[in-house]
Length: 295
Image (cartoon, rainbow, N blue to C red; front, top):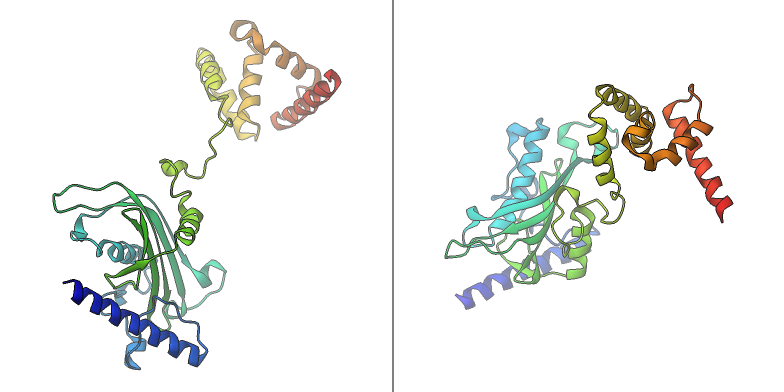
C-alpha cells in the first residue's frame, strides 16, 4: 500500500512538472492545481469528477450552491468516511466578476470566484468525531473555457496540508503562514476562540454601557409613551446614549438622579426646536469644552 501510494504521488508530481513546463513555454499563467491537459478536446470539457450542470447555466443560486458543494467534496474525500465530515462556523462568498463590476456579459462569458472557510470535523473508524479544525478553499470558474481551478487548505493533526488538485485525494505540506493569511482574510484568526457570527467584532469596552442601558430601559418600561419616543429618537440618527439619556431627563427625579448633570447640560445647550442628532452634537461640544476647562 505504501509503495503504491508513493507511485501515485510521483505520477501526480510528474503531471504538475509537465504542466508548468508547458505553461512556461507558452507564456501562460497556469495555477499549480489546474489538471494537466492531455489533448485538445479535454480543454473544452469539465473534469470527469467535477462538473457544472448545463441546466444551471442561467441559475445563479444553483451555480453558487454547486461551487460550495465542490469545495466541501474536495476536502471530504481525504477522509475514510467522506459523508460523515461536518462543517461549522463557515463563511461562504461567491462572486460573478463581470457582474460585480457592472459589466453585462452572457453567462457563457462570465467568470466566477468563490471562497469557503471555517471549521471541519471528520469521523474516525470508531465513529467518533475529532476536534474542529480550520480549513480554507477557493474555486475559480472560466465559463468560456469550461474550466475550474481551485485550492483547498486544511489543518490535519496540527499540520497544514494543501490538496494537489480539486479532484485529487493527495495532499502536500502547505505553508502555515500563507494558510493563516488566507484564513484570516475571510474567517479571522485560525487560532482564536470561537466567535461565530461575531468574528468581525472587537473584544474590548465598546459594549460596556449595555448593562446600564438594560437597567434604564427596564425603568422606562413603566412609561408606555417612552417606547415610541425612543424609537423616533433612534431612527433620527442619534446614539443609544443620547436617546436613553434624553428620555430619562424627562423623568429624572423618578428614575436616576445620577443623570442630573447630563440633563442640566442638555437643558442649557439644546432648544426645543433642535433635532435629536443636532442636540447630541451640541452636547458633545459642551462636554469637550467643560473637560478642557477642568484641566
